[in-house]
Image (cartoon, rainbow, N blue to C red):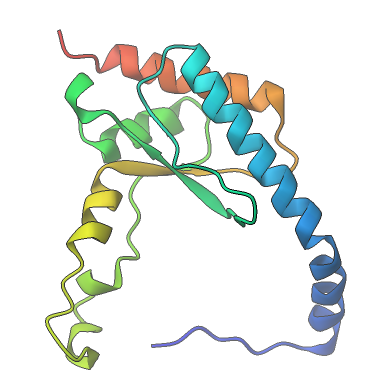
Length: 153
């Protein structure tokens, strides 16, 4: 299996213009994630984001759930955050080592326990470069609300 990368001339012209904006888009995405991480901390959330480094080009962001403090899976947690109106992918289904049709094409057992552990400990936040302080505050509030709902007694 492979991705279809066929491209016509019009799409290529749009792509060229988009690439010219890429550094700014990535900078704004990193800026938003840093705001969100700060907002989560200030609102008392136990969920964390991975470190955001200069040069990162985040398309989505895993949000790590503190499973010791909640009585649900990260997937259920992500679904609940999604029910609050936040765009999420509650369960990342793209760990290639779990695809039955990919296994015969791998040189070894192709076991990826770290990838599976990260997937099972997090949900993915979907966002764009136009998000700012308001969205960071609202998303953090939704996460805190879900944490309180699923809190262990």
